[in-house]
Image 1 (cartoon, rainbow, N blue to C red):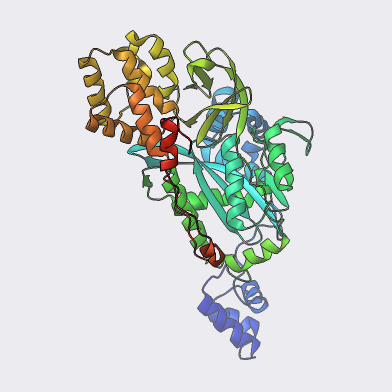
Image 2 (cartoon, one colour):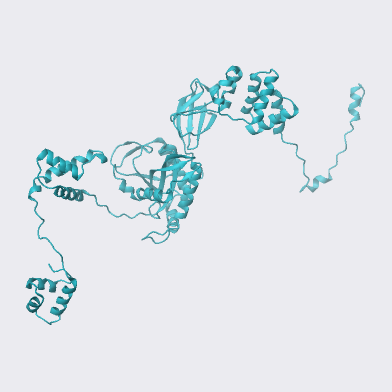
Length: 498
């Protein structure tokens, strides 16, 4: 087949403009007559085309076997499925195959090409959202940590919101929604999800789901409709699937170095805000402009703020510790061995006994940690002062230096450890800042017992009597009061009459 485009154009131009005939052109250019016919009939060389697929006699009887092997991979782990090389090795070892590896490789490629799913482009109306979690590495307070990335996107405007949490869980899921709704300025009418256990407890049909109580509480508060993808059909929320990777590559490269997740999330929110300036190919405006159209179709934010938390029950053990999420948190010793309600958010763990809040701790996302509040054990130490030097909850307390000075003075006076514990128990009533000021003042004036420190702390908390201002009250300026004659009271002391 002639492929010289310059010669092709010359022959075709001359023949069609009537210079030589087709036979003359064949003789002049030393071409077959049928080649000249093809030149005249085609603007450019059509290339080589088979009238029928090439026969592969050695492979024909092995093609069903190859298809059977590859079909069997559907239930195998992704990383343990057949490669073309492995298929070839099995054919040789098990079926005495004598063909080449390249023929097997071509057959495997053809089979997989025919099995690839084709997707339909979809349009997304305003006011809808998609949610997904991903993962990334960050250098958090000097240590490399994996964090869960909550991503919500609005497919119509392509606006995206990203936040990092220690783990994917109910609290992170709820808090991510809360922050995303506030960032977008509204609640999407419909949100698409995968089949995460955070949201569903059981799949009861293609589209039917039994939802968790906490997901229903979130949905009841914000009033959005939920759509769950078919199992293994994450392409139904393909927008957010792609944006998980986009935000990770563009917002988290290089690996961020931060002191806290709060600092990281503030930076991620800033980058999501800056991303609204972009205009994507095929869109009629910037993300920010299209987000305004999304907001029109959204539900309004509820007036009542949502409490993103998980509630569970546990019992405080004899060490006044309550187990939650692999860690243990302290409660005052008076609540040891009692049933405790645990209310956990992303940042805090609140412990409730009989409807009363008895302890609040910063949430620990590490594993197998004991989180103490030393104040919880002071009542017990007042009864058992001998354990003061060995009390584990007090090991990392780090009180100001004035408390150590007070303790030495109390010991020097022979008042004992119990008296010092009584001073510390004032932290059950006063803040550490207020009690520190009271202790420093007590040391200055030379009193060290717990009763004196309490009086000083209470006195310092009292507000001075404010003077009554007559500004704006001119009518009160006309009122006169006579000075009291105190000599009248002196006569009472002598038994006389006033």
